[in-house]
Image (tube, rainbow, N blue to C red; front, side):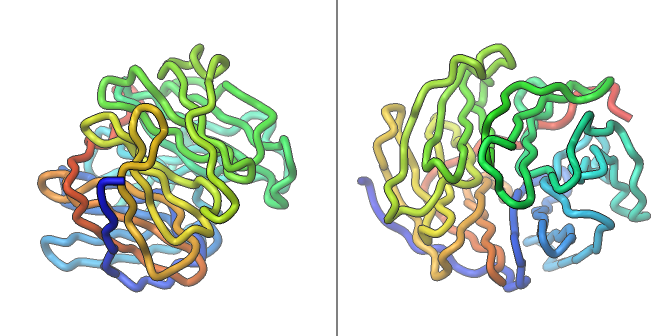
Length: 282
């Protein structure tokens, strides 16, 4: 292991289930969602601005759209464009055949501009989780079924490799970063019980995976062979996700649950800019 660092609290925003940190370099702004609290929150480290916005349904994730003043929000009611100035929601795509009692979970835009996201049963029923893909038109399609609580995915800068976690199993899989590659995913790492469960994740500019540990009080960095290279510790148990941001993409922002907030850590690594949804999306 290279070293261990501690994260510092950036905003004690009291998130019930904070998730999906997302840095927008165009606005110098960090977004996150509170799934159970039904909120979108954002802060601007450069100006000190902090905003909390109530939403009509549980948000699984936010994603960048081509227009800096809009986000895509993944809600159980569908994929919505969200006007940050006016606060309005526009349905872009429904989620086909999403059963009652299911919600969207994690989501990420890959370097090609495609949106990958997951759904799960609210009661965390085994095998009810699905990984979806939306390419900006039509309705989302199912890529993988039989999961339970899918988290991620995350992609290398060139999109050649993707990672996907199924939290209750403790397993993180690696796959060729194409829709067809998901079926051939292979085990990348498996967390022991003492380390909690793999949750949200990101990949740095060197291609190394940063994995949040729900129930494990940390984020870990992993080499190409899955070996742990570094660890960031937090003073809270349920660490949910992480993303690089800041002017040089060298700050690791970390979300937490259970009344937690948003943390940051300087870890000596540089991240990859978040993907932006492809052109032609309304």
